[in-house]
Image (tube, rainbow, N blue to C red; front, side, top):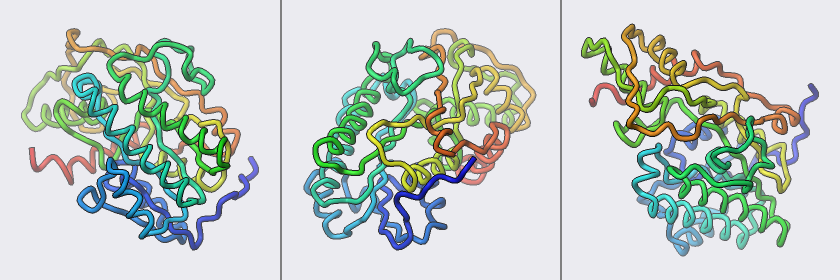
Length: 319
C-alpha cells in the first residue's frame, strides 16, 4: 500500500490537545512528541471548556494552529443513563465553544473526536458511516450520542459555510493506560480489569459480570486511537466523518476470559442478568480509513496486558 500524502505537515505547528489529561488526550501527547510540533495544554483549573468567553480568551492568547478535541464528559452505561443532563449539556458546550472559536480565530485544522454510540441501536452491522441518523439510538446513552452527532454536524456545517478544515473521527470502544476505573461509572474493559484484579488479590473464585456476556464489541487500544487521529490530522481533509477501529469483534464473555488471562486469575464468571446489555452488537466498518492507508496494530491480548500494567502502577495501590 502506498503511503498517504501529507496534506497538513505538523512540523513547526502549535497544536492544542483539548482534554490532554484524559485517556485519549494523554495518548495523543505521547504520539505527537515525534512530530516536531509545539504542544499546547490547559487543565480544567486553567480553562473551563464549558465557558465560551474563557475558551475565546485562552485560544486568543495561545494562538494554536491546530486543535484536537479529545475533551468530553464520558462514562459507561450507568453514568450515561443516570446523568443525562450532564452528558448532553457539558459535551454540547465543550464542542460548540471550541469549534466556533476555532472558526472565528481561523484555526488551520481541527479533528473532532466522536464515539461509535452515534449509530442507531439496531443499525446494520458492521456499522458504516452512512448509517448515521437512520434509526433510534440506544436509550442508555442517547444523550452522549446526540451531543457527539451535533459535533459531527458542527464540523460539517463550518466546512460547508466557511471552508473550515474541520474533520471528525468516530472511535470504537477504547481501553488502555489512563482509563477510568470507577467501580460503577467505568466502561467494560476497565470495570472487568478492576473486578478480576480484586478477585485475584482477595482469593475469590467468582466474579459477577453485568449482563448476559453475549453482546459483541470492538476494542481499540488507546495508543492506536491516538495514532489514527494524528494520521487523519496529517492526511485527511473531507466533510465525511470516518470510523476509527479495528474491524474485529469480541463477545463480552470472551473479553472477560482474556482479561482473566492477562491478570492471571483462574476463577469463573457469573452473569448479573438484572443489568443491561446495551446494544447487542457493535462492530465498525473501517474500510474507508483502511483505504487511506491506516489500520490498528495492537492485538487485544497485548493491549490488555499493557492496560493491566498501567492499572497496577497507577490505580491498584489506592484500592
